Image (tube, rainbow, N blue to C red; front, top):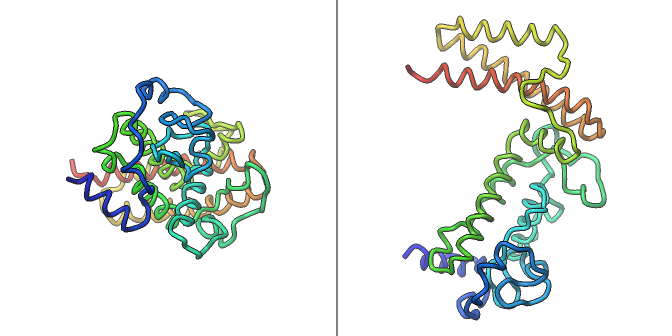
Length: 272
């Protein structure tokens, strides 16, 4: 029942791919093709696959295609968002989805090439909107009456979109992901040569938190951590704009320390 209602809603919204109900039956070797990366559609063999269509469905038979696992999270969300705007014939904000967000009102340095859609500055409201729009297209609930192959592809699409959204939503995970795309990683448990003064600051904050017995005391610590994270977020944004990845690495390491303090605050608020 839900599958039928979902299909009706998507057709009304203009999101459901045209002709999907009348496409040809799945070929007998669909299962074997699903795990590969053919040059064309796994179902009808149409050349070009989803690249020639809407990014999800074959332009000929409208079968859901496997996700492109070579696409990074920034490209994934930007691509899907742009295609959705074209589908909906929305003319607003055609310049991209990174216009506003943490760290300022601009989008950072303009780039050309494959890195052009990678920016630390993200409009989180638009990111959430794109996430919701995308899940309306690929969520498994909308494929309950489809073939097993498309159900499997839907699960993979949905999981990939969830991972991309969660990673890009938070400044810390977004920054770490940007560094990873540049081949720079910060191993867990490393202090990355943190200066003694900073480590003492973190130690004192942890001691205050351990001794805090009232809600007011915890709120005071929480307020200090929030202000520190805001300052560091602004600083790391500027570091990425300058392509200063070593500086970004240093700042993100500090953000990770404060993030650990935030987690401890949340745990302490939970009644025993």
